[in-house]
Length: 555
Image 1 (cartoon, rainbow, N blue to C red):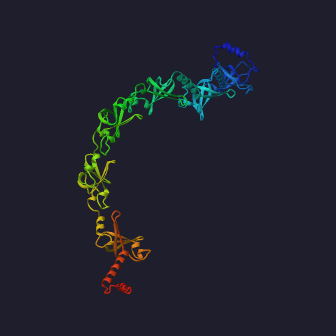
Image 2 (cartoon, helix red, strand yellow):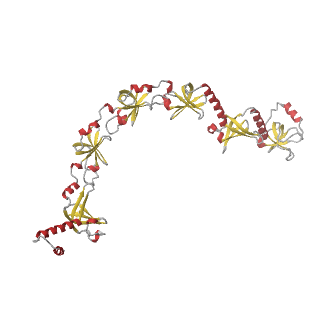
């Protein structure tokens, strides 16, 4: 620490008054460099014995004759000399200046020098103070290049250890308190206040009102439902706002802009009752609907499903343009939620109200195929009204999967109306229902008690399958119908390829099942034999022996 040599009188007085016994450790003295070698600069402070300072402590190379401030580290001589330190002298002087600067105040200005594991090192006019991370507040985002000076509150000073603990958070809290006190003193909700727009966010914009950040929510910018805030506000712009709410406990302030003008929704119920036809301008179009401005600040929403009676949802962008004026019907008014629902299709009658009159169930029609899909095909019954022929309703043959090979779009086909669902606007049609199903034919061909013969084609734990002679259909003989005797397994009596006789128990058309019984066939056969014996008996009676003899003869 060099001293101005122009103040020579002060320097000479200081030197002349010193003796080896009068100097004390940890005290700053002024001296003159008398010699410099490769390692040290030798300083005389007016005592008989000189002291030395390591060259590493000098910011610039020292010269003989330079006047410097040094601190005596201790009175013990090293190599016959005192040990002086310029660095220690600087720190001591800075510490004394620091203490003087904070007399009567706990606020200090400093620059952030570097970040440590738990906080920041702050230079306060040469004194290195510590700023804990938990108390750093906005310092976390500030530059640490030493050029950004900010104010801190001194939390604690350990004069013995010469350590200083700072808090940026406490300083800002106190400053905010002053601003909040001023705000609450001079303003209340409902007052007009001046503010500057600082930034945009998805949910609105932030406004600076005298050092406090207030929120202008998107819902409080305009009475319009759809708008672009950047066309109403600009960053850095100063303008008037309405103070809506002050919540000091949560540190929140709500502002309004639209509240500076009357609310157009106050008269909406009188002007736009349900069923009223209105004209408006399209202000926004999306794939799922559009907003129509019926008057400034009042917009209604028309869903894509309310544009056309067609089941197919139209894309508004393909039919209308932004700025176009169109007519619509008011469907619903919700004043509480500020919603106005509009419809365009309601300007015309709903064709689905009379659909059953034009296309009754079981009526047969001929129409072109409009579209073929994996699950079936659509036929156009009339403009905007389609019917679906599901793949399962095309043919009684369950193996039909390739529709494309059998039908072409535009091809006219005959079909029958199966079902109409007005609510979902769906019409089910069918082709196979124009003819009887194969199982309906089987049911007519093989009524109950019909005797049939066939070949055993399969044996299962629950019974066996029999293919009827002269037909492609197979019947099932359940294990309980195989024999009048109780059996555990069918294959103990029959094997595949055996020829059997059976009687038809019934046909389940829906389940596509033909039930057969060998047991009932045997019962019917015996009854028939008894009848024949009785008819041939001359006495009109028959004995048990005759019946047994007849059975044994047959066997």
